Length: 452
Ligand SMILES: Nc1ncnc2c1ncn2[C@@H]1O[C@H](COP(=O)(O)OP(=O)(O)OP(=O)(O)O)[C@@H](O)[C@H]1O
Ligand SMILES: [Mg+2]
Image 1 (cartoon, helix red, strand yellow):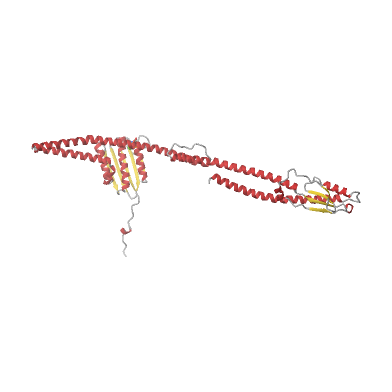
Image 2 (tube, rainbow, N blue to C red):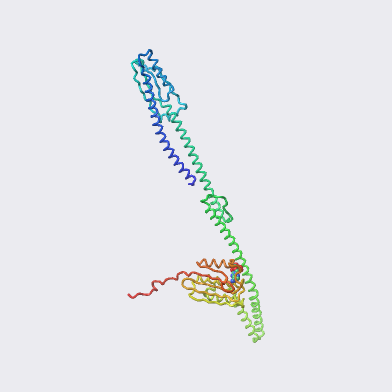
């Protein structure tokens, strides 16, 4: 059920309940008022009639006097007066005031007071004509109560309608942004990260709108980064393949050609019986194969640097150093590994930190020395790579893909990365601290046995 419908239901319930209570109270009030008023009118009317009946001496026309008394009640709101002959015939009757607007029959039946009759004793001077009777009539009182009740009910109905309309409008306006947020979330879900919420919202929803916009901006940014990374990966792959093709073409193809040529010459020498000439050719073939083996190892190392970790971190770093030494003979590499061996998952992270730091130092810093210090204890491993090159140009380095990737790898294992210029002297300094998960405790079977 929608919030709007729920609200309408609870409001209606409260309104109907208060209406019922209001009606109950009004009913009992009207009931007692009709009775009190007609009773009071009867008392006052009886007093006034008694006063009129108080004639001092004999009267010439008693019937006329009684008719006069009855006529005094013409226009009365609650009483009828009449003179009845001893045989019951009505000799005279007052005309009560007709209500301006009569109450409907059902209302009259509900609240009217039963007519009350009062016969007034006549003095001897007026005796013999008949009986003077006063009788209550609640039509006027009921009509008045009906008019009051109708007014009250109209005001109540108007008030209830206003409350309902206002409550509906407020809830509708309050919930409108939620619908918009829902649609915006759907758009985000279908990949449209440019979606933003701009419309003003109620103060309570402002954090939701701002949070949504921040999330959308972050997603959009990450989408851009993802695309850029993908492009870079594709470019790198292309470059890497082109370089491998060039290397194979330049370094392997000529040796294969020379091996083929030497083998053909050996066949010719053997056919001519010149076996002395075979030795140098076979030696040349062996030399070419050695060269190709060496080159193949180089290519394999570039294709699968991770596999080098099978040698352990120090071995993998040695290989990396050998790779760069052969290309950058002017750079001195100083490697110091101490402490406990690092866990294998951290080995890979440590290796990537060293690998990218080497590439960065050589590409951007033109150093003469690169130092690597790796130390590990029970709690953490520290990997420090320092060079004496140009260092970072600004106070804080701008992260490219290399440093970002390094940071993500370090964070993924719960570590921290600090990249800055060296405090003393020239060059850059990259320090990664990787927490070591608690080494496995000694199994009970391995624990020291206590003497029985
Ligand atoms: N050892 C260093 N000496 C001097 N500047 C460095 C060094 N390492 C990084 N930088 C600077 O920091 C920037 C960011 O390095 P990062 O490795 O993130 O990206 P990159 O090397 O430019 O590109 P790539 O994404 O290919 O690694 C570099 O462009 C360079 O200006
Ligand atoms: Mg880099």
